[in-house]
Structure formats: structure tokens, C-alpha cells
Length: 196
Image (cartoon, rainbow, N blue to C red; front, side, top):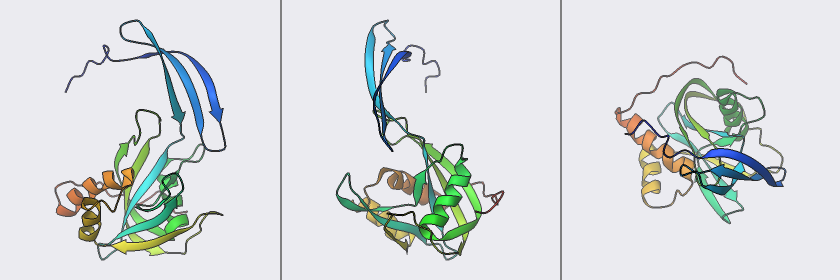
């Protein structure tokens, strides 16, 4: 893989705010191109998110079914949520796992960071695995409705293969799930510094 990317880099010149809502913040940047020309780039600024692949002691994956208005569909997803201002990624993962599923985990392992829509958003989703789950009761946000359920890795991967899972972070996590379960990829499991 090439290591010198200077011939690909665009340089920031200026920014115009297009829209700032409660959740979305859209900007239009003017950039200088590698050939010294200029262009504009419109994209969504996002604070980032954390998603969790929680495993029960019997090896099942904790999943959610949640309606997403933008697609007008109920999606099967791994638990996830947006980072709060100043919040660390592991703390966010712990908070979201407890709020959405009611579980806390004895051990956590960072897997990867993904950018689900690189063409029009700077959103980064940090994917963690969790195990040693203890049920403490979900604490859903007001206006949040979802079903929590478990599936074997084989069931889950079958749904990904058959197109029943369409959420990008969940599909990206499927590759890790398959390789972690098979033993091909190892995770560095650690106890969290604190529990929510």
C-alpha cells in the first residue's frame, strides 16, 4: 500500500455553514485540490458514535430491532449510540449498552473504527466487543423504542448473507464476529476502568 499520499490531499481554504439543527450540522468547505484548482465539499459534521458487539456467556450475540425513519424500515442492529460532548469512547459504549439493552459487561475489547459514509460525513463509529454480561435493566431514552434479542453467530451471519441485515455498522461488525468466533482474529480483552 502506498505511504506517500501528498498527491491526493485536498487543503482546507474556508467554510460556510449550510444548516445546523438539533442533530445534523451541514457545512460547505472550499478546498484547494492537489492540482492547485479549487472545489467545494458539502458534508455532515458528526460527533462520532460507539457500537457494541455484546456476547452472552453461552456465545449468543445481543442485537436490537429498531425503526429508522430515514429508511422507513425496522433494522436489525448491534447496540450503538452517539458520543456525548467530552465523553470517551469506552464510556459511551458502556452507557449505550446499559441504556439500550440493560447489560453491563465484565470485559471489553476494542475492535475497529469505521467511517460509514466517507463521501458526505465525518462520522466515525468505534466498534467494541463486550462479554461477561450482567442484566441490570434497560434505561431507554425518552422516545426510544426497540426490541432486544439474542442470536447465535450462525443465525446472525446467515441474516447478513441473506440481506436481512442492512445496517452498515452491523454488517462491518459481521466480518469481525466471524473471524473472532473462528479464532482467526484475537481481541485484547480488558476489564473496564469503571462501570456506569
